[in-house]
Amino acid sequence: MKTAILTFWILLAFHGATEQRQQFQTGHTHDILKVEFSPDDNRLISYSWGDGFLCYWDVKSGQLLWKSKTGFIQKSDERYNLEDFGWSEDNGLVYSRSENGRFETWEASSGKLISVAETNPNQKAFAKTVRATSVTKDYENFYVTSSERQEKVTIRAFSRTHSVYDVSHNGRLFAEGGSWGNAVIRITEIGNPKNSYELKGGKILSYVPTELETKLLKEQEQRRAILSEAQRQRENQAAIDTENFRKQIYFAFEHYGDMADPRELRMLESDEPKKSRESKSAADSKAIWVRLHNDSPLPIKIPTQSMYLPNPKCYYEFPSGQKVMGLCDNKEIAVWFGLEDQKGKVIPYGFDFGSAAILLPKTSVVFAVPRETLRNGNAIRFEFTFQNTSAGKSADYGKTRMLRFKESDLPRQTSSPNFKSMCLMGTGDDGACRRQPGFARG
Figure (cartoon, rainbow, N blue to C red):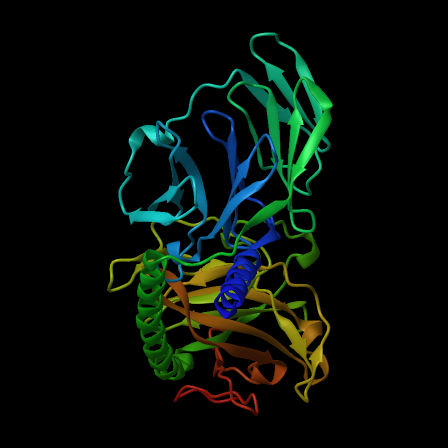
């Protein structure tokens, strides 16, 4: 009797544990990026980078068969969105191709990851068959046309983006992936668009990572640790370098003159010298032309009011061989700058267009400042950032640095019309002008 009771409780506990693992689970919670029918149209696969899941559906019943995590596909911190899917000839295996160049093989019956490879394990699997239908769309609808019957069917879009969809191989079903807030998949009969249903989820086993996934996640963690240490060392070196190099970024008064109305500047402007060629006396001028020098060994990024087409002849090559194009020497540009009063308080002025340009090493450019902005002890100000290579491309190097220019930095007396008052502008708390030896305030 006691044995029978004990057996009953063991079976009950096992049943409860099984039920606990087989709970109803939603398919996706974030934007769906990909939906695709299997070659026999009985299954459909979907993917969302936002929630990190790959889902496999039974098309006829609308039930979720399994969902598998995909984060382990990322090697370290690169992009790894799943871009394409394929099936084996017997539909027993599902293949995926990631944006980072990896190929994954999944067991179609369970969603278990079988392998991850750097080369395509099945070339035929990703070959797409020619569909008998074509799809066009506008802001509200999809228009599905059969190449055989030349009939156009209108299907109302339901997602926020309505950019993720697929048509079954037999041309009978249309699938659209939803977006955040309604991340379901809607299946519509093309022959009867009013007849549709949604794939939302199903009662499936809770996700349990496989040994292969655990191994890949461990390798991922190790790679990230190496990158993190390299980034830490880069930041430490950047702090040292930029502290030394910042003194080599400075303003020099060029001349008095006039300037174009900043409100009339276009998104794309020429950097050929125009207004900067015209010099006037201080009494007759409305603008101050300033030369920005980069005498450091690294390029810097500066904010501009317009974009300027790159010149292939003007570039800097890093020791690694990576090249970055920038402004040619002695060009005329419009710098975006802010304004602050004599106490250092920011004054609302203009707007940030969001454009930027690269000032190459041993290069200078000129830009204009309206004289009226420097009244009452005001100063113009903008930030710049050194550039250096990181992960094979040019990137910000060190923290941003502030440049300031004010009326007191202008020459008071000159013995020659070619005199230029040079001011080294750093990030000192007092914002004081630090001048090169040999140059006085006047």
